[in-house]
Amino acid sequence: MVRIILDTDLAMGAPGSDVDDGFALALAHSDPDISIEMITTVNGNTDVDSATILTTELARRLGIAEIPIVKGAAAAFTHPDIKRSPAPHVAALADSLPPPAPGYAAVEIARHVLADPGEITVVAIGPLTNVAGALMLDPGVASAIKEIVIMGGSFFRPMPDRGTSAEFNVWVDPEAAAAVLRSGVPQRWVGLDVTLQVRLTRDHARQMQTATTPFAPFAGEATLGWIDHLAQQHPGDPAGADSCAMHDPLAVAVLTQPDLVEFKPAAVSIGTGDGETRGVMITDLLESADPSPANCRVAASVDADAFLAHFLGHLRGL
Image 1 (cartoon, rainbow, N blue to C red):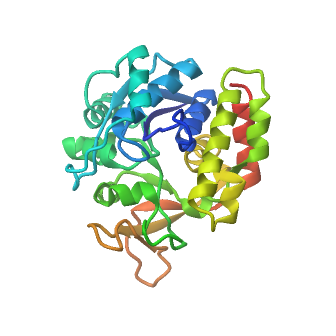
Image 2: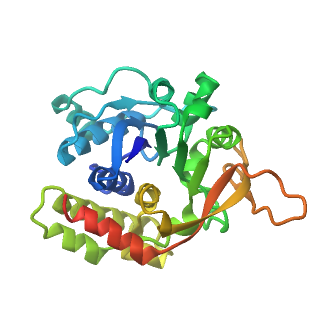
């Protein structure tokens, strides 16, 4: 059994919003070899209040409302001046939902892993603000975490959009990502090099819509809405017209399906600050005569068909 804390910027449930964080939570719940011990939320895809509300609603929908949900960082380390708030229709959902668990995500992550050293894996599928915060609270946190599995980064390919010079989760808070890389915690990064190869199509979404289970029809409708949004926002991307990448579920899948992804040791550094290279990753695959020490393992290849079989096999039952 892999015991996890899932740290997420979940937006699934708002019309036309990203679905992969929600699918990651659903996959973790449906995998009998994963135990979700806590969910923490972070600013990223959406503001942290919306992420907390929508995570609570999705947990209710999945029948896992008993799992503690703790609200986390509202902004990146170097930009506390950027304040975001929920849209009215999302804020209105809070009236019918229980409040989040007390405390702050970074503190509760630290508390939880220190209570069971070597037992808890942190699965980070949003910006790394909460995780970096937890590592800075107590020097013992780094040695107490079993592993951090991160959806983030782009190690072998440039970004196609100059406006966002790096993969989104890293770009939002590169200082936090750099801190995690310096922490010494065993960590695997599942980046765009592999996640863009695992895609959910309109046909998959329509199949989910026709299911008679409680979650799948909702998931199919949300997927079609997200694909429509991608098609509008990125008209030059042919893949985005008919499918969407399952970035975050792949990071969950590698917890119990190690053969899905090949990882390579690497020494990675990150461009910080607000310039054009914000969040850009420099990847050293340790092939020189005098390589730098590795600070992580990065995903280099994926069996996309095997992932989809694993993912859809679990999702059809929800």
